[in-house]
Amino acid sequence: MADQGPAIGIDLGTTYSCVAVWQRDRIQIIPNDQGLRITPSCVAFNDIERLVGDAAMNVFPMNPANTVFGVKRLIGRRFSDPLVQRDVKHWPFQVICGARDKPMIDVTSKGQKKKCTAEEISSMVLTKMKEIAEDFLGVPVKNAVITVPAYFNDSQRKATRVAGYISGLNVLRVIAEPTAAAVAYGLDNMFSSSEEKNVLIFDLGGGTFDVSILAMDKSTFKVKSIAGDTHLGGEDFDSRMVNHFVKEFERKHRKDLSNNARALGRMRTACEKAKRNLSFMSHTTIAIDCFYDGVDFQCKITRAKFEELNMDLFEQCIGHVDKCLKDAEMDKKSIHDVVLVGGSTRIPKVQQLLQDFFDGKELCKSIHPDEAIAYGAAVQAANLTGQGNPEIQDLVLWDVTPLSLGIREINDSMSVVVPRNTTIPTKKEQGFTTTCDDQTSVTFQVYEGERPKASDNILLDKFVLSEIPAAPRGVAKINVRFDIDANGILTVTATDRTTGNENHIIISNVTGILSKDEIDRMLDEAERFKLEDEELKKNFDAKNSLENYVYRTRAAFFSKNLACELPASEAKKLEDEIKSAIEWLDEHKDIQVDVFENKRKDLESIWNPIVSKF
Ligand code: AMP
Image (cartoon, rainbow, N blue to C red; front, side):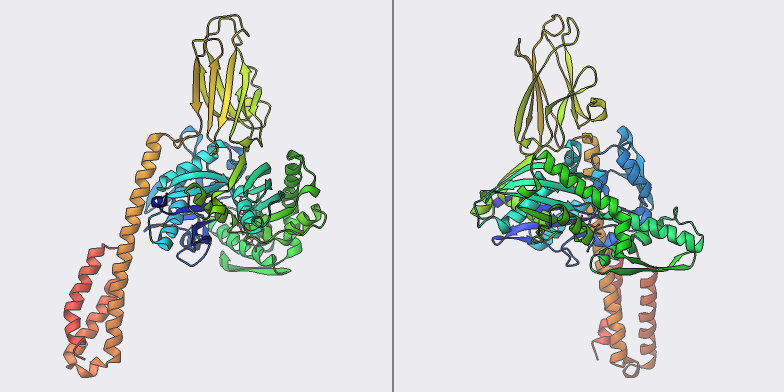
C-alpha cells in the first residue's frame, strides 16, 4: 500500500477549503503558499491569468464580475432550482442557464468570454489544494478523500467526484462533513475510553449548515441522523449586514447601489470583516474610502444589531437541531457532547442559543472549527490506503442516506424503498407489479427526496425491465432491490420473479450528469490552464530576474560611485542604458519568457565587464 503515495483529506468548503495529511503518526494541516491553513474557495479570471485561493480573493473588490466563489451552492443542481435562482440574484458574477438546465458561470478570461460549470470551478480549487499538499510533501499526490455536506444528494456528491476527477485526483471516497468532524473529535476524545457516546456535531460554515448525531465509541462512528440546510451560513449573515448598510447608505446619501457590483463587493468584504470582529467586540465600524460616486462610507454596528438582523437565521439552526434529535428518536439529555465545527460557530449568539437549548450544557470547543473536517478526511484517507497507526486502521465509519430513495408509482406518488437516515451500506427490497393488462415492460424511475409526489423530488435515473410474460394487470411479481455501498453508490435492480429476468442501473458513477465529451473538454482545459500557469510563472520569474539584475546594477552604479570612477562619457552611457532598461521593463509587461532572458543576456554582456572592474 505504501507505494500509493500519500493520501490527503480535503474539506472543499463553500467559502474556504482546507487540506490535511497523515504524517509522522499524526495529522498535519497543510499550510498554503501564504502560510495560511485555510484557502478561499475562490477563482478569479483577468486579462493575464487565472488566480485561485487568496490571490483570487484579494482581487475580488477590483474585479467582482470575474471573481467566482460559493459554487458549492451550484454543484449538482439545476439552473431552475429555486435555491440557485435565489443565489444568482445576489452574486456579482453572472450565472446563466446552459444545456440540460445546467448552471453555467459566465466570465471573461484573458479577454475572451468563457462559460464554466460548477464542477470546473471546484476542480480548480481542488487542484490548488492538491498543489498545496504536493509543495508541502515534495511528492505528487493522487489519492484523496473529499468531504461534502451530509445533506448533499446523489447528484451533488456525484458532481463533487467529477470535480475531483477533473483535478487529477483519485477520489477514494466522498464522506459527509459531520462524520469527518466526528472522527477528528473522536481521535482526541475517545481513544482513552471504550464507552459509547452520543455526540451532536453542529457545523455552521460559510454557506451550509449541518447538524448530525453520531453514536461513537473508540473506533466506530455511526451516524444516527442528519438535518440541516444547504443554504444557511456565514454568507447569509454577511448578506443581511450588506442589505442593512445599503439601505443606510441610500437613506443618508440618496444613492442606489443595488446594481453596482463593485460597490456591493467592497461592502460585502467589509461586512464579513465586521462580522468577525463582532464575535469578539461589542461594536465595530465599517469604513470604506471613496465608496461610491466619490462618497466615503463610515458606519457603526453593534453586536446587538447584528444579532437582531440575523436572529431568525440563528433560530432556524436551533430548529434543525431539534429535528435531528426527533429523527434520531433521542432526547436532548441523551447527548453526551455538543461539538462546534465551522467558522460561524464563533458567533456568540449562536453559541448562546445552542447552550440554552441544551439547558446550559457546556459546548465542546476542543477541536479547531476550521480544520476539523479536513482532519477527519485525512484520517479516513489514511485508513483507506492502509497508512496511519493501528488505531486509525480500526476505524469504521457508518454514514446514512441523506434523502429517501424510491420509485415513482403510476399516480406520481413516491414509493420509498430506502428511507432517509438509513445507515449505509444497505440493501432494501420492495415488490412491484404491472398496472395494465398484458403489459410486457415496466419503466422504473428512481427518485430522491422527501416529497410525497415523485415529480417534486429529484429524478436520478430510469431503466426498463422488459420481456415480462403477458398477463392481467397485477399478476407479475417484480422485485426491486436498492443496494448502496459505502461510497453512497446506488445500484437498483429489478427482477421478474417468474422468469428470473433482470435489469439494473448503477446510479453513481464518475460521469454523472455531465457527458463524457463535456468531462473530456474540462480535462483538456484543466491541462491547458496548468500549462498556461506554468508558462506565466516562468515568465514572471524571467521578468523578476531581469528586474533584479537591472536594479542591482543601478544600486552598484551609485554605491560604487561609478560616475566618478569611469570616464565621463562611459559613465553617462551606462547611466542612460540603465534608465532605458527600466523604461523598457515598464513598457514590456506581458511578453515571452525568452525575450526577458535574451534582454538580460544582452545587458549582462555589456554591463558585467564594466561593473566587475570596480
Ligand atoms: P467555514 O465554511 O467553516 O470555513 O466557515 C467560513 C465562515 O465562517 C465564513 O462565513 C466566515 O465569515 C465565518 N467566520 C470565520 N471566523 C468568524 C468569526 N470570528 N466570527 C463570525 N464568523 C466567522
